Amino acid sequence: MLAEMPELSLDDVAIFVKVVEKTGFAGAARELRVPTSTVSRAIARLESSAGVRLLHRTTRIVRPTSEGRALYDSSAHAVASLRHATGAIEPASRKPKGRLRVAAPGDLSATFLADTIVAFMERHPLVELEFSLGNAHTDLVDQGFDVAVRATASLRDSSLVARKLGELAHGLYASPSYLRKHGVPTAPSDLSRHQCIVFRGKDLVRTWTLRDGAAESATEIHGRVGGDDFSFVRAMMLRGAGIGLCPMVLCKRDEEDGKLVRVLPGFSARGATLYVIYPSRHKVPARVTAFRDFVVDAFDAWANRQPDRR
Image 1 (cartoon, one colour):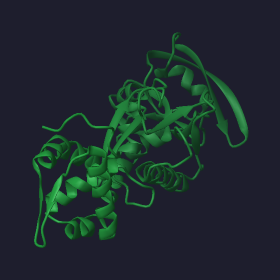
Image 2: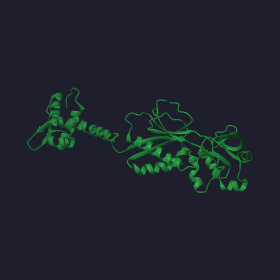
Image 3: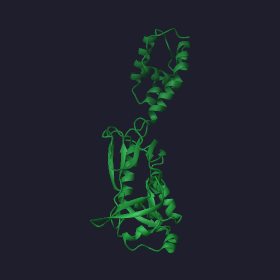
Image 4: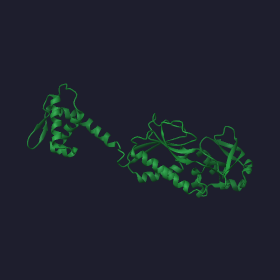
C-alpha cells in the first residue's frame, strides 16, 4: 500500500489514470488531446510528490508499479465520476441537454403549456423535464428550480430575471348544454340572472369588470360554486354548471372543439400577466434559454391568432 503522501494534484492523478488505462503516454495524450510532453511532465510531478515510482516504462508498454496500482485502484472510480459529472454540465455553446426543473401553474400546464411542452420535447430530445405544478409562488433558488412560468399581477422578487409574455385576458364561457337549458346572455346585465362559476370567491356574490374595447363596466354576478384553481372553473364549465370567466388561453382548444362556447364575445376582462422567470442572467444553461424562447414564441403565436390580441 502507498504510504501517507503529501496532497497530490488532482489533474495529475487524472492524467495518471488515463495513462494506466491506455497503457502508454501517447495513447493517453491522444485521448486527452494534449501533447505527450504534458503527460510526461504530469507523471514526473506526481511521482515526485508521491516519493515513489508509479509506472514501469519500456519501449513497448507502460505498466503501474505496486504503488501505482494502489493509487489507480483508489482513484480511478473517483476520476471517472468527476469526468461524468463535468460531462453532464451543459455549456451555453452546446445543444440543450440535462434535466430541466420547471415550476408552473397546474391549470396552464394542463392546457396551453401541454402542447408547448410536447413540441419542445420533440425539438430538444436531450432535455428531461420535471414539472412542479401549483399556483403557489415557489422560491426558485431555495427549491432548486431552473425556470418558472408564473401568472401574477406583480413580481415580488427583483433578483430574478423575468421575461414578460403578455396579459392573460379572460373571456366568458359556458357549455352548449348549459346555454340550451338557460339561454344565451346578450348583454352583461343578463349575467345576474345566470348561474356563474367564481374564481377565488370567498363570497359567491362578485363583481366582474368587463371591457368592450376601451370602455369598462362592472357587472354583479351570483355564483353557486367557486374554486381557487382555473382547472376547477374550466371543469365546472365543461360539465354545464354555469358561465365562467376564465383565461382565454386555457379555453381556446375547448372552444375550437365545440366543448365550450364564448359568451358575449365582444367583452373580456383583464387578467394576470404571464412571465417566464429564471434565477440569473449570467451563464444561463442552454436548456433554460431554449425553454424560455420556446414558451415566448408559443404565446406570441397564440396571441397573434386572437382577434382581440390578448
